Every structure is written in structure tokens, then in C-alpha cells.
Amino acid sequence: MKILTGNDLASGAVTWWAGSWWSRHVEDAVDVGEDGEAILQREDGARRVNAPYLIAAITTPEGPRPAHIKDRVRALGPTVRPDLTLKPADPQAGEWVI
Amino acid sequence: MYKYDQYDQAIVDARVEEFRDQVRRRLAGEITEDQFKPLRLMNGLYLQLHAYMLRVAIPYGTLDSRQMRMLAHIARKYDRDYGHFTTRQNIQYNWIKLEECPDLLAKLATVEMHAIQTSGNCIRNISSDQYAGAAADEIADPRPWAELLRQWSTFHPEFSYLPRKFKIAVIAADEARAAMRLHDIGIQLIERDGTLGAAFYVGGGMGRTPMIAPLIKDFVPAEDLLSYSEACLRVYNRHGRRDNIYKARIKILVHELGAEEYARQVEEEFAHVKALNIDPPAAELERIQAFFAPPPFDAADVELDRSDPDFAVWLDQNVKPHKQAGYAIVNISLKPLGGIPGDASSAQIDVMANLAERYSFDELRVTHAQNIVLPHVAKRDLYAVWQALAEAGLAEANLDLISDIIACPGLDYCSLANARSIPVAQKIARRFADPARQRDLGELKLKISGCINACGHHHAGHIGILGVDRKGTENYQLLLGGSGAEDASLGKITGPGFSEDGVVDAIERVTDKYVALRADGERFLDTYRRVGFEPFKEAIYG
Image (cartoon, rainbow over the protein chains, first blue to last red):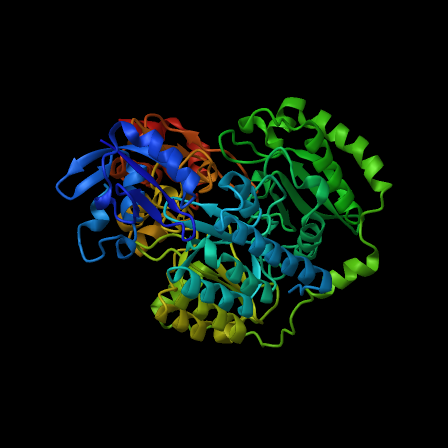
């Protein structure tokens, strides 16, 4: 699957294309199939998100996850600060990307 | 400490307001990211993996308690309650919001700080010896000269668009504590026949093509220091490559021309520059030097009570002799066992500020090894300082030992990184957690970078680690034999890389071999240089 990601312009937060809006949770990311480039062009023009780009992703029981480690780190936060990940209550969150 | 004059303050304040307007226009959609990116980078604002990252300049690593408290305030109010001290003696914040950045910079400006020239192809923050003004072996205080270079390089119109970034270090002791020869220009103040001058080393650096800077001029009279620096930059600005980012640093130019020819061209340019009369008049230099006058030392020398064994260990490891009897230099390790090298919470930053104000004539230093220094502590106060540090989790007694690891932010934060650095540092620190074992291994500088850009100085580590991406998987190359000190050398790659756990095992095989081979009093680096690469390679790979 292919998903779209970028950083929110005002806050810099990592965001994921959720079909009609940008979510901060990778779980909300949707498979854009062959429409990725068109959405990128449109959203880049809207200027809500900084430098959005298309990445490969995989499906997991927790939802979509980026295929490459760099974007997996982006998705959940620094692996060395589980308190700053999106799942601070999950004891596995810090280990998730390894 | 230098204090801004009206010109310093005016240009920093004006830059804040200029950036505020640029941010407003970006948020309003009036300018594109392509237009905005170079503007934010000129103000130290990067976009990293998780958010905007702001790099704040700490000129030559020197700051006072008021500035340190402001850094803590920034961490609390605008970030996630911590900051990361870097190998460039700066601090970085990892979670900055663009919309809040102008207010943040305005607050920094109130304590004479900014983030200007912490990015871009310009002259970056000048680095220096963290023991400046306190070390017994310095022939002069290098900070007035670093300050002079700061003023000269700030918004220098000719050097705002160099072929690549440019880093200058100034030291004044034979013991090179600021990785001087791994800078674009390394300046060592020296004395000759009673006259102060400087040796110029030009064309060093790490990154993709590491080089140790050759000596290009053995003595430049101090009064010509700016003119000669300007000449060095002019030759680079004219001939440095702009067609290939990987060949754009001055080290490539000096290497390709040859140090002798580069020096000849600098001499030729120097003859022109000297006529421009840019060196400061004596009165201006004296004005700057007056800010760095020694503090009023008045503590009597005392015999230290070493009856507390933990305190005694910390004294031996983290406290260094001061040039003034009765005083000592305190190194605060930001490398607690299993912690993140260089990170400090806002509360810890406040504690260090308070200690500096009370015990160190209001001065702190940031080291390129990502630690903090209280440069002037009366010996009679050392126990109280140690107790306060211990209470704040800042009394790790591991300076220059294997767990005092330099590590870049790596793939946990940095968009350039290929592999994570911090978890590897943490695993190594845990593997060698036994303090007695660490002390038995002695001085062992371990440095980790998460990519070839070498922010973690892996080339200069006695043991270096370089993280690479091997088909989407993190992989770690091991290097041996580097040094950033006065005996500068570049590490040699041992062979095929390792997994995260594998590299920790490999390092233990290296240290075991060192223990087996060392002669009395030999550091790891000494043994490596004596016996050579092969015994260690054999130990690593069998």
C-alpha cells in the first residue's frame, strides 16, 4: 500500500493523509493507490502541510505502518523516548520500530 | 563574559522582527516553502523527523546563569521539557512550533542569544576550549579572540553564501580540547619571542571525506588574526567548488591545491586584505578583553576531604586542575548510565545555572563532548557542588571513560540519519556499566554518528561507530584509532559492519584485546598505535 505523509506547517507535527484530512495518527492513514501524485499536487497547493511525500506502507493488526524504519520512527516518535511516542501508555511502544 | 553593545543587540532584535514577518507570511500562504526554507535555516530552524528543530548558538560554548535559565525556560515553554547539547557546543530543541518560534527568539534576544548562522553556508558558531580562562596550560584566554571572530563573522556580507558551511575553532593550549584540527580553520594561539600570535591549521573536517587540517602558517601576529582569517576565507570563497556539494568544503580545496599552494595564495591575498585595515584598533581589542578578565579569585587552597568514596571517585574523574590555587574545574557529565548523551531536562539545566551562579562566578561552558563545565569552583565548595549534582542526576563520574559517549541524535530525530545512534550508546554504556571496569579501561573516547555527515565525530573516536542503511536495515561500521586531540588521527574501518547488538559485542572484544595487550600506563589509543590494527581486527572477526 501507499500512504502520504508530511509535516504540519504551523506546528511541524508529523501528519498522515486520512482520505480528506491530515491526521497526526498513522493509524488513520489511508491507502492512496494510484492517486498519490494527484493528492500531493493538490495538497501542496493548499499549503496546509510541509513537503508532503508518498511512501510504501504495510498493513499490520494496529493499522498501516510505513515500510521503512525512518518513517516508522516518524510515525511513533523517538524510540529512545517512549514517553514522547503516540502511545505512551503502551509498554511496547518504545520497542515497536526495532 | 562578553556583553552585547547597542549594535549587537540592535541587529539581533532586528533579525527577530524580520523573521517574525517572514513566519507570518509563510503561515498566511504568501510565500512557498521553497522561498521560506532558506530564511528559516538562516535562523537555525530546521525541519527534522518529528517537528521543527531549533539550533541555538552558544558562542564558543560560554554562557552565564541567566542565559542557561532561559534555555531551561525555552525547553519548558516551547519544547518538551528538555534540550540537547551538541558537538558544536550549541543546544538544539527538537519539538519547536513554527508559529511560536518568533516569540521564542525574542525571548532569547533578551539574554543576548540567538540562532543566527547555526545553519547555512556561512561561518558557524566559533568553538573553543571549554577550559578557557581556567586551564593552567593556556598561554592566553582564547575567548576574546573567539569573540572578535564572532563579531567579524556575524552577517559578514562576503561570507554569507560560501560554497559550504564553515567552522572555526580557537584554542590557546597545546592540549587540544576542542577538536581543533578537525575544523575548517583551527587557530592555536601561541607565543613567540614574547609576542602573541597564532598558528593556522586550515582544511580539516569530518563528514564524508575526513581530513586533519595541515599547518599552513606557523605564526600570524595576533594583530593580524582577522586579516589572515579573511584572506583564508577569500581564497576559499573564490576557488571552493560550488558544483558538487560533496567537494565544496575547504578541506577539498586545500587537499586538491596542496597546503603549500593554498598557503601561497592566502599570503598573496593577505597582502591585499591587510591594506584594508580590518583588524581592530588596540582600544577595541582591550574593550573585548576586559569582558574576559579573570574573576576575583579569593578562596584559599584547601586539602580535600576524600572520606566519601563516591565523592572521591568523582573528584578523580570529573574534576580538573585550575590555574588558580584553591580552585578547580568541574565537568558535569550529561552521560548518565542508559541516558541520552547530551540531553538535559529543564530542571537539570536550572540546577546547573544555579550552581554556576553560586559557585562558579556565574559561568558555564558547553563542551564538544556534550558535557557541561563549571570552570571556576573553589575547592572548598566541591563537596556541596557534587551533592547538588548527585541530587539532580548529574554526578556520573565517567568523564573520558567508555560510557562518556559522543552521539549524534541519529535516526531517532534527524532526517539525514541512516541509523539510530542513541540506542547503541545506551547499550554500550549498559554493557560497561561497572564503574570499576570503566576506570580500569581508562581514557577511551567512543563516538557514534548515525550517518556519514559525522556529527557524532566517529572519525575522531578512539573507537568510532558509523551507522549506515544496508537495504533498509540499520548497520554499524566500527572504526579504531581516531583522535580529535593534539595527536589528531582518523579512525580506520575494521571491516564488515554489525547489527546493533553485534557492534556492542565487537567493542567488548576490542576492549578485551586492549586489556590483554596493554603495557603499564598505556591508554587504549596508545596500545592501538603501538601494536597496530591487525590484532584488534583479528579479535573482532576471529
